[in-house]
Amino acid sequence: MDHEIRAKAKPQAADSRELTRLRRQLLRWGAAHGRDLPWRRGRDAYRVWVSEIMLQQTTVVAVIPYFERFLARFPTLAALAAADEHDVLRLWEGLGYYSRARNVHAAARQVVRDHASVVPDDVATLQTLPGIGRYTAGAIASFAYDRRAPVVEANTLRVYMRLLALREPTDSTAARNAVWEFAERAVPLHSAGKFNEALMDLGATVCVPVSPRCNQCPVISCCEAFRKGVQTEIPLPKRRPEPTAVSQAMIAVRRGGRYLLRKSPPGERWHGLWEFLRVPLDDGSDSKNEKRKRHKQAQPAAARLEQAVTALCGLAVDSNADGFELRHTVTRFRISLLCLTARFRSGTPQGPAEYRWARPAEFANFAFSMPARKFADRLAANGSGE
Image (cartoon, rainbow, N blue to C red):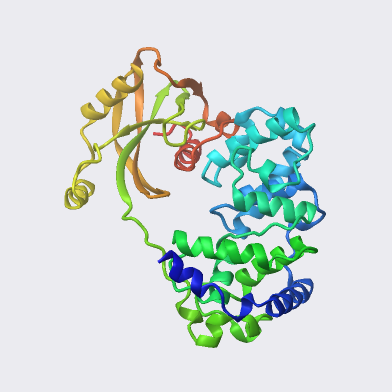
């Protein structure tokens, strides 16, 4: 299979004259049609780096307001390195994939410590920093320093696969290897950053996943898929695993006018973020049919939830049987959260996690997981939460 794909990866576009034409046409198109994005205003490596980390698994439209708020709070690499991790997570709240925020914070501190606060300009050194892989390193090196480095992400991967007419899923190892090999040759010695930006913009606006706008494409003469009439068949869909259903309860324990918050420790989902108490409603071993039945059944018995709270943190509580459901998807997990309130009876919170009692007016000071933020907003809107 590997050899077969590599053989496919040598169409006419791989000819040196075709590559020259591809570069020239793409750079000309990019100069006229490139997107005006806040991280492209200037070539500051720190801004480029933050934007590229935020853009992983997230759309440009969603990232722009987060990027602007983040840079307003941490305008320099030194400011980010000096920040408390909780403050970083609070600014990241809602973007998801929080390991990205922890990594960029740790990497900023490493750059201050090991590189005199200057973001490295070569791919190899960049990849020694937490959270920076081959793609991100190439993006920083080419966009900020105009180094000759390829950039292969969702948009450019699709463009390259169509240029090469690779009929493979985008997550195919063999196809990715062929694309990276071609990308290494395609990126020009000069204006590498502009070339990569134009390629990304082409994938985002013209060479789109469904119904590509080939009549608007500046490099149509270099596209092997168009020559063969198979551009709508490339790339093949990813082989997505069946999502795992998870059922949990999130319980807001109230004592007077305060609610108990728990900071998830390492090893747990949403670690480093604050939540209300979260306990399982199943052990993950139910069949699909059993899970469907469970969702249709009445609310879990109060006694069962009270025991789960005691097991989690040692508190005795009286739970409220009425609640509402939140649904949330994280990577391959489809999470159903039953949100309930409970009244504190006795005990002191204990365990490996950090605990705080907070009033609804103080919730804005905490970095919450997205489901916990929705629950917190509802509690704050209801005043007492009852």
